[in-house]
Image (cartoon, rainbow, N blue to C red; front, side, top):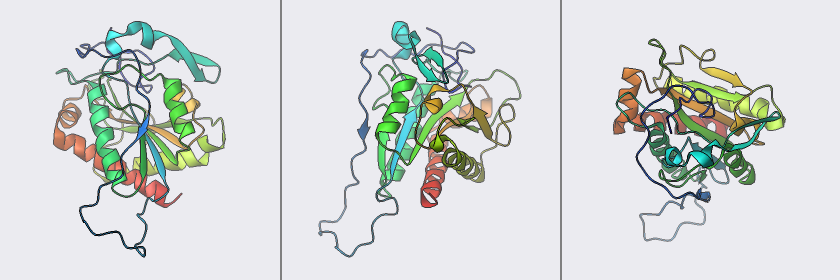
Length: 271
């Protein structure tokens, strides 16, 4: 099984790269919420304490692909509903840097850091996968996790794999034209807030997809099937040397996570 580039939210197969070596069980893990932050104080909380800023908010984080996808082609290639009357493969393997650092590992690491930052603010975080060694879940299952959680925001985290020599920068995809109310103004507001937050944290917008960092899409199953405000963030191009260096380093991943978490908080504060 070959890697596939992620322009298209990991649902359309582009350029090949080295396949991941990790083996996985064929069962996709069930979603779970992040544990509540543990207090460092032994004293009981004050009943007059102000609730955390994110109290009552729910965010679903969807790290693209999975580490076991490449070794289970039958499962990830089976067709599933993708909205707008389409069917698509359950999932794909994702792309990688030229040095072999895989997208699935990058997205999982960033999602964990984003989730930890949000949970520290009192936001309930639900992940679509709990490890980087499983298979799937399929794109329709990922959308359903967000719907079932009644999420205030669903953010799918990816990276692209364009081989164009000048292709670099991030973009934020959203479903268009909208299929329901949540895909209208709420998702567009989430997309704009996400774009603004990542750009303001120092990342360049895409030179090759969308316009000014925004990309309306009608072909991404996870967005088409969502009934909650949802976006897909392509953090950058893994085939670009500079962005590959950022994504492959712990400091670079922490920077991406910081920007995404701050943008989510800004959206929730205004929603």
